[in-house]
Image (cartoon, rainbow, N blue to C red):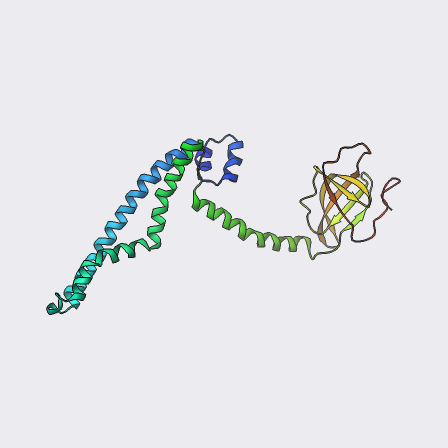
Length: 240
């Protein structure tokens, strides 16, 4: 139940991850849509009424206390009375609070439409905004931590060691290197055996242990890699 409710608030990527774990957020999204629609409309009307009462009272007080009684029949005084309603309404509409309150029933309507049209949930925009802002802020933090961890950028080194054909030592992670791709190095093709983090010259480095692909092995995704420096011997059939 908790996962279902949580998933109903989340954006599509995060929600899909919980759905794969068994969450069923659609019906909770429908219930939340009804609550947001009716509660949002009520709060919006209450806000409009309260704002109108306060501003109308302020205008009336101003006319009675600040305007000469002999000028109450003037054009300016009559204009203040007749047009005060429109001015109050416009002032209420442009308030940030009004926009925030209006978003509540609008999201409720979107939830109901999504449920009726596709049977799916609709995430909360505010939650989407918070998550995406957090992700954006995390980028420079991860970059800074990476510099502390891996040190300054430096050229890769390609070496050989027992148990594999080549080892690529890199001062930065290579997320595109995985078991699903093949690497072309010096005209030969390699597959990733495993990845390790090692100490290298006082800093951390990512070690990519490679084996040479079999002659008849099917190659899927292919990445070409040009080592920045000399390549150590890779054994009898490897690079020199």
